[in-house]
Image 1 (cartoon, each protein chain N blue to C red):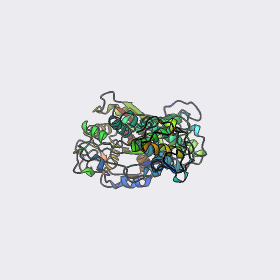
Image 2 (image 1 turned 180 degrees about the horizontal axis):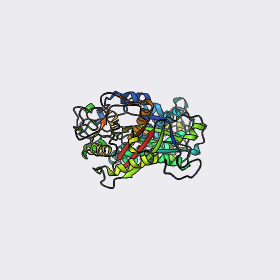
Image 3 (image 1 turned 60 degrees about the vertical axis):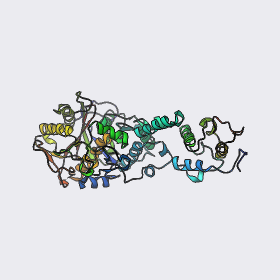
Length: 418
Length: 98
């Protein structure tokens, strides 16, 4: 049961939120079907990248199966940084999947919540170099509008003629999940009838990849990129950076039903918390993250044993996966199945929580849990039921997706089969 | 028509290239009488256009004064003059030329 208070139009406690559409552009595929096929293959998409050649970490999980300029189309593409293009394409997919038409909807009742962790850093880097080389006249007047992280929310709102609230939450690697949680609040609060929510990120630039490498966050398996992202494996050594976007269309279930929309899954809870511990390292005992999960369960009216499946944050870093194992094994001793998409698509930062929310919806719909890539050997100390090698057929009624971000941000999303 | 005549009916190939490739303007709309407004180029787009022209041809200009309301024929003539190293014609004010 929701903890949100009754307010606004048609909202309130007990109101179910429906996921009526999904869209995504990922390293495993630029649409729902190719993404799912890639995820269920269990094969990593990481590869060496030409633009990273010669750097300490020279591989990543890029999106390379789509011509983004063509997919965005129109004349406005020139003013969009790559993360914005990813978001626009994913948002259009999601709205089309929901059977909604921005040409005819009441845009004032449509919100956009689009989490971005960094923004258009490549535009910033390029212009810093231009200014250093050629002076102020070489600086693009587009630098600011292309760089700001809320550019994605703004451009998606333009593309969708969405005139309701638009927000760009920045909770680092939890941003996409935070966006879904905020969208739920907007719907329960009654200020929107439709919210298009998710996350986008594209920072596969030499500077940013090197910066993550310098802080020791990335896997250094340069000789074996495809084996580098290995969530929960005993020999994991860091995450593999990726890029992408995912968007979900969320509506109050009764509103969706009234227009003839279909609920692909129900978002029954969205809990958030903060470690208040360290700028980047998770609190090792997982108590902060657990507060987010417990909050999501409370909102859903579930007890832990109700949860059949967990879509883990599972970054493949030593610290995260150890903390998350501690959390899961303590709160869910009944051993729900666990998967971690980052083995296949890498860590897409702000997009990750949204992509994994979509993956969780697909697991509920298709009764299939994708395997964790490269998980050959689970540490003895990790008492988890990880899905490995092959997708597992499992009828999942209730699932939780975890997302954690630098800054100590924790988000848990609870989804239920319809 | 080129040279000392400001008015021209040809369009500098760099203008066409930048408008079509960067700003995704359909080639069919790129006509001597077209203006930036008619091509849906807003002030930011025109300013970016000016930066690209400066970067690629070395022709600096105040975008609001020189490009915003001019026709492509006017802009082309200005660029031709500037690239040719001649003093800009009085019909087109020049903020900085090489």
